[in-house]
Length: 145
Image (spheres, rainbow, N blue to C red):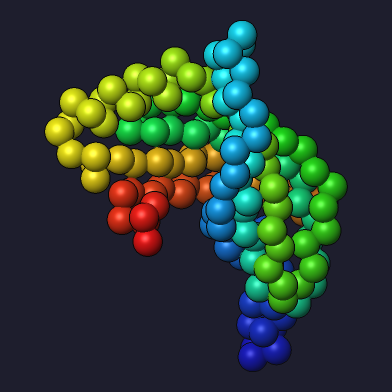
């Protein structure tokens, strides 16, 4: 029984065992003709399993102040080796109109420290294409720490 439990913990949990966060971001481009700004989000994905698993896709929506400002839909064929943390750059196209509306909402709140950023999406991994939900949210303290 102990061996079966160890086997499940180390191998069979599969993609649901992955730990996902955002390490950093960087500015890429600003396009005023299309009203978009591109940024790169550096996702940190930790695979605590003993075996590797293949990252197939990351997709979802980006929110600022609860206002949808962009989306991610990126496919991969990236091997996440077991027991390691991997940094995956993801390009996100944000809508300037949505960002402007979110900035206005933040200003109207009367306190810049009410700023919130969030990502709500899924990471698809493994040969079976298991979708792992990702819900990441940052507030002012998280962003300035």
